[in-house]
Length: 335
Length: 249
Image 1 (cartoon, helix red, strand yellow):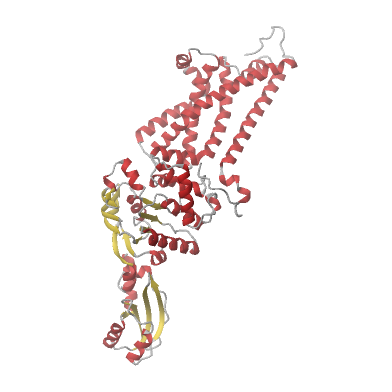
Image 2: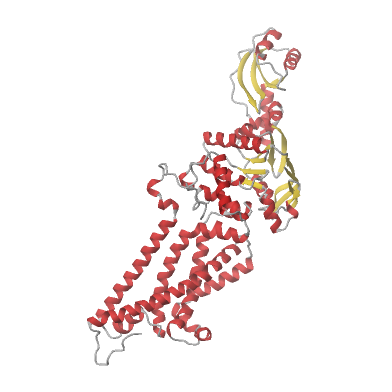
């Protein structure tokens, strides 16, 4: 697990990270999102102490990395697997030789390296491409090699810095599936730094938004998606343009408050209110096995009290869509 | 040095050409060979040091970097003839003489090291800096980073630079010939230039061109062999035949 306490990093007078607190539990995939320049890369580099924090502590498995000398730090880094943006494979080494790097540094014997590298490449589904050079592999395959290398020393913590950025959608999906699988099989804690919101919803258990070097908002992905007032939730699943309501109808945005919403809630709502309800836009899905949904519905001149009560009974939150949208725009500027 | 010719015989007879030129070529290759061995042994660590003391290096240190860099620049900026003359006391201190092959190797090595240090530095600058971060994050010591993430990945570029450097040293050896170190350049000057022996002149030119071309060809071939993208260029994009797990690099 990773525990970051009061982490600050400044370059000259510019504070890139400002007393940041963050934790990743054992077996948790925690995403960090934020616009470019928010300090994501600096955070990634501070976790492995490739950049030394100005102040604050980074605990990995209970050991404060900031307190370690060079030799001990080298040992501690071996317990953190790092997956780099654009894979970071050495161009003159084969896939196998790239995966072997951390083992070579550690001084593992040749036969052992050979066995372990074989296992690792098999693990990421590239058992047959051991002798291929990076330029002979696709972007997704290269990132798989990068993941195999990160796993070489059996780390308990994985740090992924924009691992899927620049990959095509299919490769991204397969890399994310692999990360989840590795988390489930090996109980890894994964700090997943990205700017891709879809990847977060796909892979992460929880997410924190980094803004101006601080955590602006944080929570589990499901909670955030169910909270209509959450700016981060709106960033994860932005409201798509929806149909105009019929003349006389009013548009309301509703969202699942919990997983206990019946799939036929729209019909039930109509029956309950005795009015025809129209569906103007909706996104319903399961995230990490939990139902999550947002919809915009059109209701003929609703009696607000009745409507709220009915929505509440069905396990839904609701607000006039115009107000929600207006808020979302304001909050997006903030976030 | 070969054949001291009778005073009245101005031109070298054709059958004497090979005994004159070949030993001289041998002298040149010995001078350049020993020099390049010293240049590589000193220049590679020195170049790596200068690079890593620089702003993008492993242990940036402005003062040390500036000082080292300045020293290298001084070595690079002196014309070889001036350098050779200027360091004669130093040469005599090391070799006990100021003529002959040993005396030539000292200034050639100094000029060559300065040259190669810059080549190494430049080659390392061409290696993606994230390699060093990858190595550090994988638990590498600074020496391991320099060896695997810098020098090893720069090998094609280093070999290319070595080729250029070797050819430059052949040129320097001709200048060193004037302090009695012999070599092919010396033959060209004393026989071809001073005695107007066009046959010797043309022969030495042909031999020099052939030598340089051979070195360049060998260097280019080595660079191609050492660059994975070039070696398999013809097959890129197609499925590559399976290979045994090759961990050794």
